[in-house]
Image 1: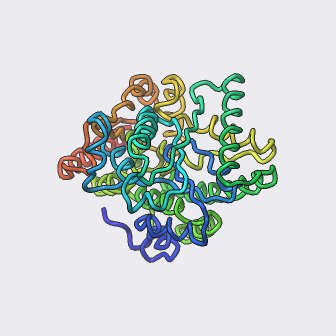
Image 2 (image 1 turned 135 degrees about the vertical axis):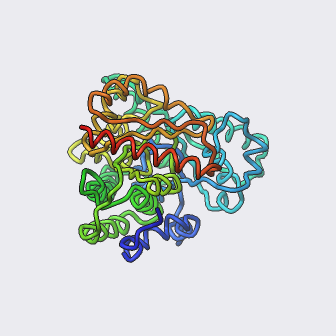
Image 3 (image 1 turned 45 degrees about the vertical axis):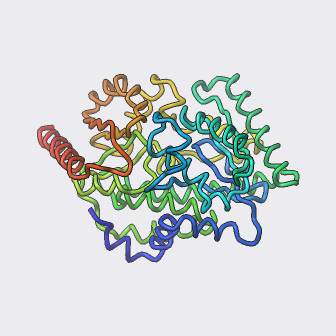
Length: 391
């Protein structure tokens, strides 16, 4: 399915789409007037603290096409998406924009990339590559000991930002940044609410484009554009596709979602940073600012690689039901198959809810068999429809 005319006719959507498609240009505009950029890879980098330090959080994007640096330095076990991120980091076009770099332990592969980058900096000190900082939250348990540990990790990150910014971050600075981020996430939740249920007005590819585009704009400007788009989208036609929840390999381009839509499926929610997991909860302004930031990243929707399968077995089926999903698509790239760990326990709960599951493994990035994938998506859409008719 191609992008819908109703979206393309929206000025707000086109603005967000342009930022998403031209990330390099949008990032350069964010960093104008000498502002320092802190580039982020991973889901658990506290952007509130970066903003409070007077710097700009920039989400790293992956490079498609040829990846000569990744082919030279990385072993074969790195999946294609992660090779793209590495290539983007070390390529001159992107690296010259990078003042500081932060990775979080959102997955094992990001942890490995962190150590590879440290070694690369030692081997080639002349390369324009900042020494990365690492945010090491403990995300599996939600007990007091884990909470206390993560609070200290957040404080450590704040101290690092103060060093980079050469200024103290006050509680007032952090509270103002929290308010700005909450405003952005709140606008995105308004958008997401239009995706859910039988009267969905937003497609998955549109949502991914909007969320992704908002990462490369000033947050206040992004929130304003999203709120404007939400008002317009009230009048957009309802989508007619089978509603799906997406989990699996990160999708930072709409390619897979668009192919799903062509096959009669529409993603109404996902557990990914370019989607619902980014805005699932605010940072609580009633708490002390540092504790509030720590709790947000600790208590958000559990991710696959840093949460217990028991938590995922409960949370994912419940989330799928809440958003009106009729099916689950588990889409995994080659060397990126950890998501299959969750499925056996989730499947029991999904079967009780009557939610069907499609598992797709060993995919390459970019996609190398679109016709074959399209047929699988079409077949799954028909399977869900048959089950719906016989329910």
